[in-house]
Amino acid sequence: MAEKIITLEEVGKHKDSKTGVWITIHGQVYNVTKFLEEHPGGEEVLMEQAGKDATEPFEDVGHSTDARELLKEYLIGRLPENEAKKVNEKNPANWAKKDEETKAASWASWLIPMSLAFVASMGYRFYTSNQGN
Image (cartoon, rainbow, N blue to C red; front, side, top):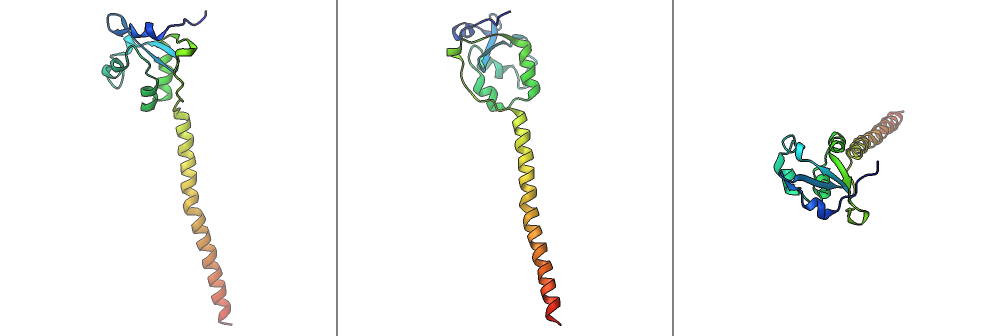
């Protein structure tokens, strides 16, 4: 079955509990009405975005992979190509990679100087022990 195309104009008509609460994220349209009470940030957060594109606020918060998976339950369609905002995902998987890179960099930031200090001290010991002969 083809995905239903829903315009931003139609999404804009769904911003309260009577008509349902629809939002768009990355060009996908979600009916989050049943999720309002379950949203960890409170229903007010979703109501602020009701009837409009919530891509940037969604990404700014940095939702987890689980939250992104949960969205699939509420998917009802997608925006036409010309109406979808292009916003880069702030993928938690990428955050984990950056954390690993940071850990590796911090490890190297003290390991290299310590190694150099050790080599220098061994050279100094060798030099001073040969001076006595």
